[in-house]
Length: 236
Image (cartoon, rainbow, N blue to C red; front, side, top):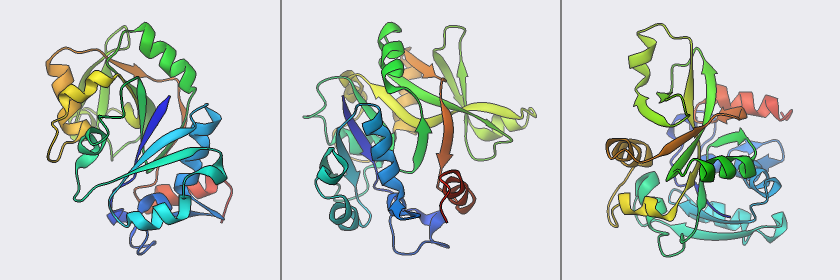
């Protein structure tokens, strides 16, 4: 399976502790964060990926090279201007002809990709979103599922926090897509997978499966979670 890693963000909220470094290059001991993502994919049998880059792209390209030192093949798609998560995937439409996965370059998640793909196929889903269970959440929206595990709604964090819910299933930043997903991504301009594509799929009653058999979710977008991931990996 081909994977797309979205690694073009600015990492604004991490700049107070990490300056002049793109978020996927945040140091984690002797490695950088994106190396853990690549290893996680390789451990799941995914050895070919495209990195979608924008901010300080040359730093990432120079560090990772062609991927051979990690036992993988890395291609690069470098945006001339920010395209959003969907727009970045859309730039690869000539390559994405079979089922593929998309990974956020600032999140780490453990799951069985084989099992996720199996459930995705069994459910006849156009898209499958890996979900993580979080408690006392104040950063993410909530995903609502029906009794068969299909996603029926995405709630803004304020909507469920006002109901005093202490935990929620959230979008964990790992997706399995069929190539037809590209029909919902315009060819030019900024597109967000989360804010544009997924709501449109819900509106059109397309099947989006929520895969919740996951563990060890980290989003290093803020300093506290960055330090939490370093502690999880037992590095200073």
